Image (cartoon, rainbow, N blue to C red; front, side, top):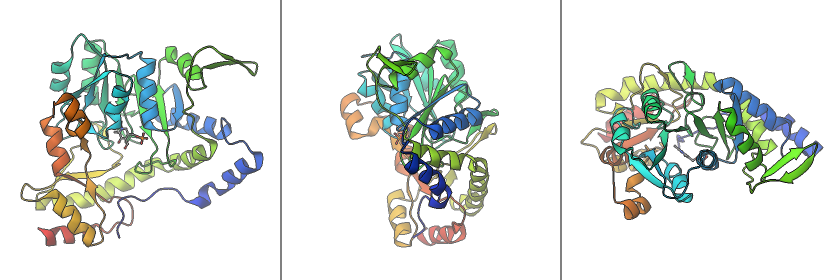
Length: 359
Ligand SMILES: Cc1ncc(COP(=O)(O)O)c(C=O)c1O
């Protein structure tokens, strides 16, 4: 089976540091977490970075630091993984679904402007499948209306727009280190920002509400434990060193697919000129004559694992039942896009051959 993903990390790479952690017994809040945070800040160019257990917990904290409350409206990109809207729902705010471009799969500026009301308190722009195309336009609109911009960069570590790395574009960015991502810690996430005013909030809230002075804990607030452990931090550090090369290699494979299947009617997710794309997921829309689900089954029967692009949030059972506001482009993309395996060693020629056979 040609698997959809392959992790860029082996046990050999982490073994020595894992032994160090087991010998010291220092499993949390240690030197590896600090090093991973430093790497993230260095790589993205941001002033502050905190590690979390996932992008979901990072997004939750982003909404909390912005003081988003019950019945506030948060405008979210509609083509994403449900976590993007779930975090809004979880705090009692209202996700407002903004439709996306059929080219880039990202939030349409016109949709954002149309959906802003006096109840809008924040915007969550998703780098769909890791693609930040169009984020600067969204940022300009947010500035115009004085709205904070959260970048759901769950898929976007290693991507950049206009020479600025994802993590350093929006007011707050949230990353995921889930195994589907380029850089994985098993589960894990990070939050980055440049605003000093947020620091105290994260220092206290991510430490059970405690302010620590001279080793003494004063619980000045209620708080959370969303900490990434030391073992996971080691995994993250090792992959950072390889990240830019991984991105380059994936773009070469992407070009190979482009050459082989565009002529068959497959249309690739558009990446704007000013973007470096990490190719977190290599997604095409299928020709209009093709039933995407049948193609996925056919390829699986031929030893090739593929999957859908991602989800139309407003069309999921929960959100459709609650808000009945399904966005057309996002719905089309959920039904007509396919993700292909993209990592070194993938036999693109064979995959293209099987697609031709299916057609
Ligand atoms: C766009 C997007 N946002 C949020 C998440 C949630 O990430 P995590 O699994 O780290 O909570 C994902 C996960 O796939 C995602 O793709």
